Image (tube, rainbow, N blue to C red; front, top):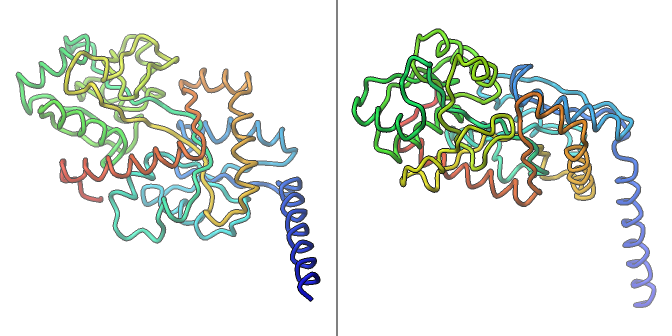
Length: 326
């Protein structure tokens, strides 16, 4: 009897193995939805469409980019959370979602518990830029200006509780400086106001700043990212500014893919492999660079650690700056 039980246990194990293999080899057998919680045309949307187009060709199956905005991105995240965990509804995640997790106490989901971080893909560096009428040439001079004129300088951001807002609050806290925050309803309006001189300073995604920097209508004086950007190699990261308090400063503005934590593990593994293949494609590299975005590959474990670290970092910034949900 014991031998018969062992036989059926082995048979069941083998059958489950074949089932998992078959599931992976057939995935995807229908269109895959990639949920983007930002408006079309921005860095998140461009990442989703460039990567999605390459995956569509790789899989011979359509990847549908679904822009679902609202509630700071939480509406779209909740739709992925409530979708069937079969790998056919994915989330284009960003540090904005880490901010929401840190800021809101009543979200119906937990980014760290209910989602699986598959891989990080791209970053759109955050740039601090000034109108050419402002005499400063670099971050060190800008910091000296703020210290000499506390509260006299105004800066625009892409909105309250955005990554750009948090990046500036962390900078101000580290350097013990004060400037007036002017939140806009999006990165483009913030940049336009800086170009026109409505505000002297703007902190925004490099994607939106870059065209005006190239036309010398804005001067980039620093990047919040750890590394230099291939899109604007001359721009110096805050940590390299020579300001001691910023030696360990780093705020990345990144995008990656997540799925329900209950998605079959073999499908999650396949997605990580295929996303890496897509990012390594010369065509994708060219498209991203042209759009002003940088590659920001991170494995599943690296992406999960980054999100978790940022949630804690943003919680600290919320407390420091007394930021309230809108």
